[in-house]
Image (cartoon, rainbow, N blue to C red; front, side):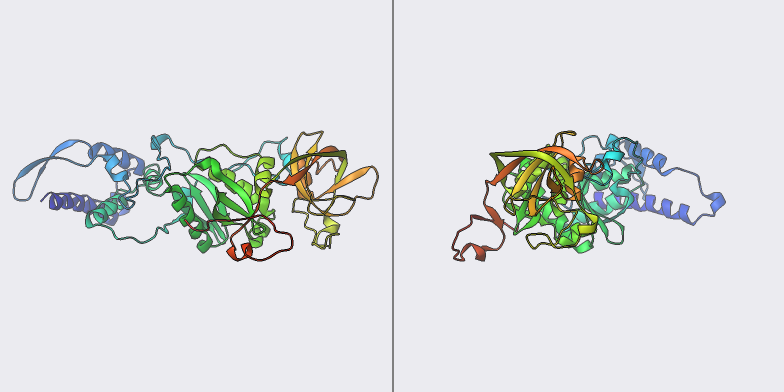
Length: 408
């Protein structure tokens, strides 16, 4: 009986709204949606009497407004994603500043004007996996859709029920948001939905420790990791789309994810040490460092690779190829880890020739030539792989490898 009474009330309200839509423009009341939503919040929480068509008088209280914010679709209470306590005052968090962005030295001296729009300004793609709903759950979900107004009410309902969302901005631009924090931008809807599914599964882990979120190299590809669980690999086409090395993207996205789960972010060097699995040795060097790009971009390096000025590499006259160096700019105090893949420089007294993006990370792109100190790094962690077959292959010189968990 209560169900029919409740449906009669909602149908009456629905008829009122549909009637107002069919009225001529000069008869339509000028009522702001925000005012309607405020009055609705007061209306649904009060004790009232209703007269039914049969003449009976019922005394009842409509559902409180917080009842409409419950996510009846998700029965899992094990997630440790924090729900917003005071959603009226909640603001959308911006993603962290990009690492080693172009023109960083100039931008730091001038005010930056950016129009930051939250995820609610885009088209939200609901890719939740299909699961059987109870009849009562379907009714309550429909009520949530019925009482959906413009911001801030609409934003509160969505943020409470969709902690991980995909937002479609424009063509080839799909953003993945976690707890109102932008984590990553992907070029296809399929990839964005897959990341959404993995992050949703990650959030449901009862033993999730956000401090274990870290970047890594998995089979040579920059990746996002949760301990030894593989989350996402950044392929070459994604990094080329952003005109940025995959290593920097992996650290940025991990920092965005750590911020979304209320964990401290990593510095550039901390993220690189986690990714490359290296630690400092006792060997150091110093001198003058320059950088090269432009004319050499796309040409062969001394070790046979194609030179990419957007990769974190360096040229040195004698150090073995694939040696990692932690280089510090003595003028700016900034540091970055680079890998030796070329020979040079051959202009005295320079002893290091950095890639363009490495110079940006050090703050020496404009200066061109700066004094430096460097520490030679050594491998301290096994290489990571998702290919279990590589662990059984016989090799003359065995290399330590760590098999990863690829699925949640």
